Length: 320
Image 1 (cartoon, rainbow, N blue to C red):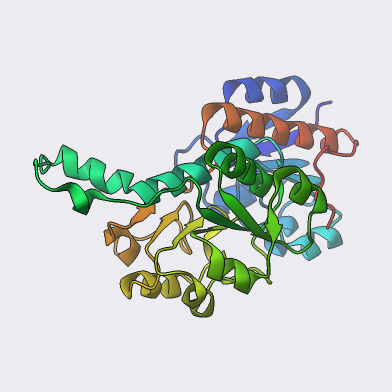
Image 2 (cartoon, one colour; image 1 turned 60 degrees about the horizontal axis):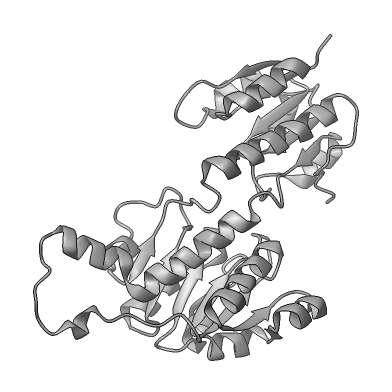
């Protein structure tokens, strides 16, 4: 008899076919995220749960006595209550590696868009306001040859550094929990303390996981250290930044601009001041959002799920 699993998020047809061969399953059919009550009812007999988020806590686990694994279609797993999962002997898995290059592409898109004011000037042209006159007001900032500071040099951070060094001849500084001598040697990048990185960088890019230590790690003190011509880029998690402090730094022109794929609250409310700032590029958390990458992520999540419900060690077990 095939194990029963529940799919709490849309998945590509290829992934559904893979699951159908190996598991009995039901799936959420709605366009909006599955309501919590609906999820708790559906997982009563499930051995596996495939999801893109939602809190995995004691309440959920109590409603799923047969649950063996929760498989996130995400590299992040801050939705896991790891202690509660340990007590219930429920495995958690994620989908690292497959999205690294895609997120690095998006990070550089934000750098270029913010520096050259692409969205702002696109709106200007489409509104019919382009006139022939002195064009100094159209000026942006160069990217090539500038200094990029990367906070968090994991796999994605290294992919961004490669683009910066080889594609744009940038000087790359990085700050990380541990130094990476091999990356320093192969890429020619330089380790700096967080304070020195903030002072010296023309672009500051945040690429850290969300943990207790990284929550609001960028606040008033950190923004005050940045150059007034610097651009802040966040492609990590919204709660790694004190958003009020970022808004204040931008309003008071202590930094030049920002490029954001993530926000403290998602979706960010329409009254967020960041949405009214022409020098801020705002995206709806699309770091990994290409068809190719989302297919690869969903398939890896399904493979993790199938391995666990069949009594095998999943390829991407969260070891904490």
